[in-house]
Image (cartoon, rainbow, N blue to C red):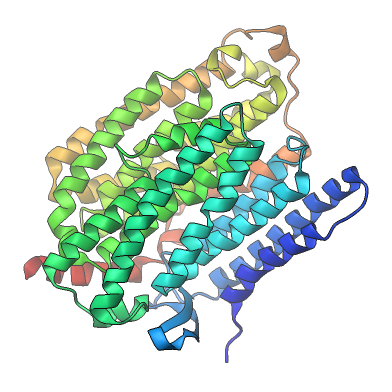
Length: 495
């Protein structure tokens, strides 16, 4: 029997949370110990996730590191875990960004510190569970479990409108999850199984049932991504969340929508996905243009990056529903790039907010002279978000549009306007913050990056450049999976 590494990965953060709960003594000492326990727990989890990566067989299109046990035998429900080339990177990214979230909160979170780090640890457990669960019911448990810690992170440690934003986030995503649960129950009634591997390989649902299931899954994942017009919870959640909440929300939680589209809509319901693809691509193009224009009008830096996330996820769905190898490849690279770049941009905003306590773009200026190291770091992530060749943002957007062009050139041409708009709002943000004259004396007194902040940004910088210069390192893991997804989808189209 092989070592149950996925279960261990899931349990370690929970053990960290339980250990933090047992800490007693002076409040300052407990807070310090809670930070270190959370950091070491996340580091160990990340190290174990790299063991997955280094031992992964990229030529195998199936699920690996499989774990299976009887969960509820009378209902034919099993505890099934496994990862493939699509999900393995998100498991590793969940641990990496949790480390960033803990480090960026080191001095900024000063109230209920143990509870805060317990929430981060539980959130890490749930995120790993989502990307490694292969039973519908088990996956749904983890999918819903993500909501509670993020609800508390926004609602307790957020900004002035944190209660409103946390409830809006919770209710929106709960509504989508309700439709997802109904779809899963329908699949169970139709097939008698909740094992995702068996459903993908051995069950074929009639087209009329696929269409209704697609509608339910699509609504759930469209809210999670989020797609226009069900995106309105995201800007509020980002603005009010602490920096760590925004990092996890943009870096990982939004990818659960894209992952769900691939795993459930395209892989499990290929014929319905082909049928609905033109509508999804139109919605994607509208989302890219509309949210880019809205981002261009923002004065709050967090709102601008939040709307840009909606636009970037539009490129994901554009590539996914092109049903071409280039499109799916590009969608995956956009998700991986956005995981790093969006998290890094929110960390940059957190860097400025920690020093000046404002997110208004007009409150800054001249940072290239005052904090030159930070200005260089922010420049790299800004250019990656724009999609400059040589950075991670370019490869994914190019491939997703190339794939979409092969099937829907008019929609793709319309969506390509978003690339220009993206450059406009991101360069406007960088110019206003880093060039010109400092807006106030407080800006002139800003300190440059500390060693802790260098430790946060350095691995993200490395990944942005690495993914931009040599994307095959990452894309080789899921090429076999993309082919296995496209084959039944194309057969469904022929039928």
